[in-house]
Image (cartoon, rainbow, N blue to C red; front, side, top):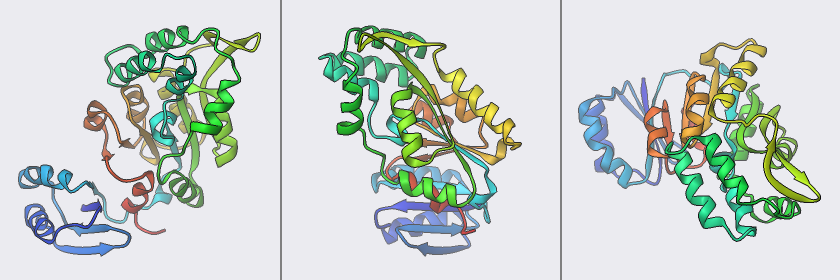
Length: 281
């Protein structure tokens, strides 16, 4: 195993303590701002250093030596607050003058305090009657990709991985991102629109945590992949079932409960931090 540290400049005293605590055999700095400690072990002494590591805004992960991105065949992303920086439903609610109310429900759902299906019904009901033209405004004016998203996606596509967006969000946004970024697959909820206005409902079955997991498993089986050949990236409780279906689960700027159950967490860096965990092809 090796320990990879990423982020701001790593203080020498901290690196020395980490090397000693993990019994690392060899240290190799790699640009940009990445340090690899070969032969490292996760020990109680390392755990004691975690507050210092997090205080320096460093991301860390123990990974297998020789692991390549091309060893995987599929990577699946949650959309809201993972692939992109916003929660689209919260921004739509802003145009209805109900952002604070809807955001509070979103946060509770992402922490796992409210069933996702119930939370979605509650939030959408608050937006019944909203002009559907605001969808284009949210996409054009407020939707931004998360730092490193394009770089990670390019690396995955160049390594031969198939790519998917599995989201409890809305097809208006996932389909545009699928086309713009070249994703192979996208699954999400379709908003019902009547008379040019949102009805406060979705068409068909709600894409919740279980549905996201089922879609990942279906794609995995269709592509003839094993579980260990799949990466899933998410940030909230609604992603945990999907992440459990993958061989490598990544919590990105995630809620504590999600970080606790993921294989690794990116708390400070961009999505492209994931690239540095793999050896060059």
